[in-house]
Image 1 (cartoon, helix red, strand yellow):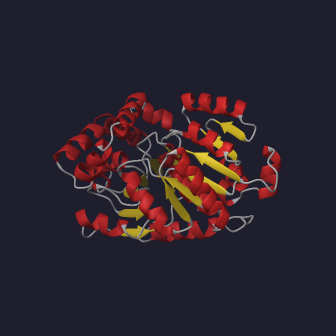
Image 2 (spheres, one colour; image 1 turned 60 degrees about the vertical axis):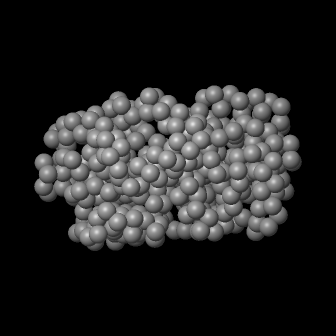
Image 3 (cartoon, one colour; image 1 turned 90 degrees about the vertical axis):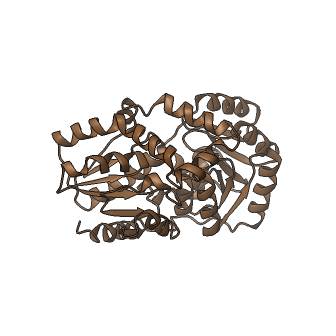
Length: 358
């Protein structure tokens, strides 16, 4: 089985790896195209710079997402064709060399590329796992045997473009480590945080989106212990290290595999809507969501609020501090251990794949 994130976004990569681990537990042999392979096909610094440039212009990414990608207009069709240019030939070369019984696409680019070459491999099944709350038009491609979506509202969005599509709703895939978080006291001891301190985890995804250094400074000044994660954003990490030097109640991190520990140590997770939300829900921590990601971020934000145990704030420091204190005042004491079972998720995943005979 081959998993194709089709993107260097850590959220897509994490979802692919979570699926791979579940599939291997079920006896499948899996391969995942990692970020280095994808970056070599053109999903590297240039694509990241273009995305950040769009986000920097108010309303631009909203316009692209809601007017073009969601409806699938001519601009979206051209963008889809451009995304396939590099990925299709190399993916075809890979599958010619080592065929796969099943390919799971975990991004619109992956879905498009695999669909384009699917007729070459008639015995291969194609599954699309949509990690967004609502799939836009480019997620929906011909020659897809099964769509896996993570919200009930996503199902009719798929059928808007493919009325006869086979769709199954499952919880978002979360890596196994989050189902085995350390006890809160153990996590705090390892980080030097007292049992009675109010502690928040502040993260902006792998990109480190948002004014996180200013937020970390303001939250620490308001008396909170802050675990601040920069992701791959080296500039942000340097700024967080500067805040850490001034504020003894701030602990700064770059990209880290300690997220289960950091979530277990925290009383509240402050982040943008995305993969970290599903992880925080498994660990059992409430969410304060920063309304700062345009386009699909708006959809994901509304979905997380509908699930409950979440609030929203603008990324202004005063708003975040006020909302964080309000949430902590009314939050129940966090419990140790996961809120969900990995085995239960694997069963749902297996049953969904079983609907197409896998």
